[in-house]
Image (cartoon, rainbow, N blue to C red; front, side, top):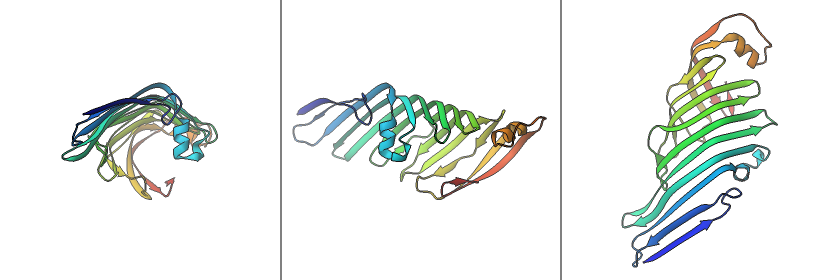
Amino acid sequence: GLGWRGNWRNIGAPRMDLRFDGAMKSLATEASLNFHLDRKGADLNPLLTAYDPGMKSMEIRSDVRLKGRVGFNACGLFGSAGLTVENLSFDEREIGLAGRDVSLHLELSDLFAPRSRPAQKLSFGKISMGEVVLEQGRALFQVEPGGDLLVEKATFNWCGGGVHSESFRFRPDMEDLDVVLYCDRIQLAQILEQLGAGRSEGGGALNGRIPVHYQRGKWT
């Protein structure tokens, strides 16, 4: 048999090293490779910029842990991986976008036909887009075969109240998407202030359902 061990330095970002080890049987009928990465306070801007050069000015840092296994045997290729992102913060001053305490926990049961188990978790402490501030967000989701993302449930706090959604599916290439949001005691004065209508006094709260439509990069 044959074994190997190594370290891939600066993969995707400075000082982010991927360690790996594996083995192959003598007749090359079976082989596997284990890999793991653990980096605190990683500067993810180089990785983001490689994906989208337009995001060059965004500051983004996070703790990242990655662990997985790939290989082949008599049944073919196999692979699985787990990714944990914690304490992620980002700041794009040019467009007024910022986020704090973002976390992601994702377990992919098949890397070659990507899919995950249900109830993968994404959460954030605070995300601001100009004057609009969302807090204490949480989403449960599942990666489905074919690249679809099933959002099982999403909740966040906004303007003194709560907002949640029912399940919906999303694909990166989608041009149209309809989502129904349910609001609970959203304060009207805070909504007007965040949406630029000036400071407002008085009471009033919003409850009920709000249909939201996405089309070609715009929400209505």
